[in-house]
Length: 131
Image (cartoon, rainbow, N blue to C red; front, top):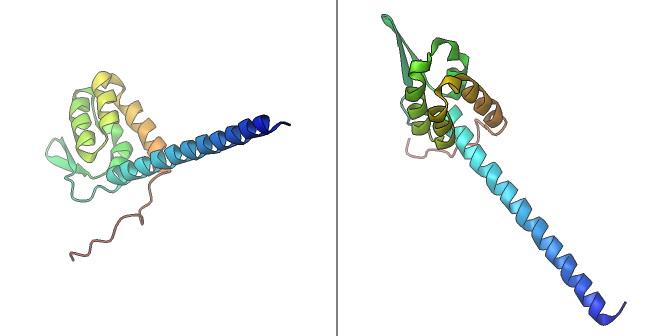
């Protein structure tokens, strides 16, 4: 192998290593974003619940898990309200999907719940030292 060929090989190896590092950094960034989003949906600190009024009673839906567990109580007419509440909790992507296809709101919410559940860490919240 000539010196020029060796230099090209070393350069190529360095480029491949840098590419792998960039990909790993992008993956870690995406995981961090999904973890933040999951925490904002599954443990929305400082956010108001969604009140589902049925007759003379009202149910307070406080997070994504409670929403998923009570989906059968919602109608298509409430899909846009749910989209607004989900957006308020921090998930603009899911809110946009529900607004685009309100008839599929239950499937969209269930899918997003399953997608984000693995990224939720209840103990992964910063300590509030103001108390």
